[in-house]
Length: 102
Image (cartoon, rainbow, N blue to C red):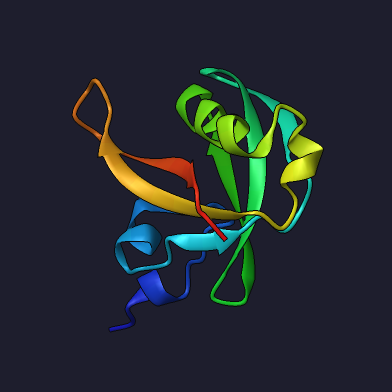
């Protein structure tokens, strides 16, 4: 029997990655505005375990990061971010980004 979980890699940061301790990461590309099923969001890329992973930043994460790093997301490149797991209104684990002092 083969455990396929190890063979499957997501292009997005997962709650499991954050729980494993991959929670203090640098932004490695300029954030891009995207349109999703829950409205517009910023796609932010981080480097985790030597791989580029995407993160869909919605309102709370955007407010957190812009309050520390400014309203122009291009200025966020190479800034450090702490990813935390919180519960949303449906009691589901979600990842929220916070600025990290350098």
